[in-house]
Length: 214
Ligand code: TMP
Image 1: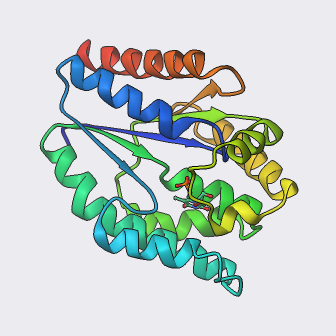
Image 2: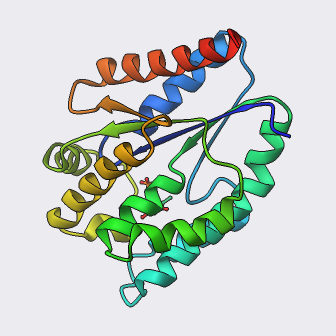
Image 3: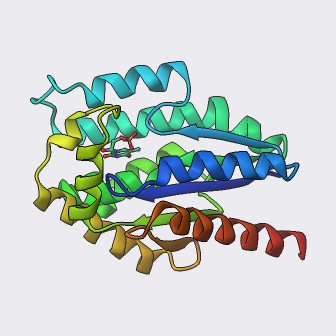
């Protein structure tokens, strides 16, 4: 039985979700919540190791389905080792990327098919769908210009994809918002950071309130 709240952050490159999530984490802690912040692919040793295999810039020969399976494997281990125990302890889990990244990137942008990616990911996550997903929606031109400016950022294999790929990622996410209307909330991430952060925090607070009022 899960008692906690599982919140994920999604979006294309340069949407600012990671920075926003860190600030949200600090704010929720300040308000007295018990919060765990984590990321995908990664979050724990095994999954961080899988991350380095997937995102290694030299692995240009990696097949799309191999990539999808590796993301799903990293997700399963991360879920069982870190997310589920935190939820069982009643904590709020903030996870930077989760299943929707695979649906948008591998399912849609890579062209493997959302249904195929859903199948392997349903096997991986079982009943552990997020309660709330914030989709930081940024135009690829804006997002890619932001990451080009951020010199300290890790460059990975998926960053090497062209703008067409990143436009497809956006289209994929847009489809997911229609498919999962109740779970996914859109945050317009083209704006300045403070506005993006405030909107995201508000959506989380509203979600927490609806749970308190149940
Ligand atoms: P990030 O940590 O900078 O978000 O980088 C992770 C990269 O991996 C990013 O380009 C999105 C991609 N990704 C997928 O393609 N599928 C997935 O399931 C996940 C979690 C990430």
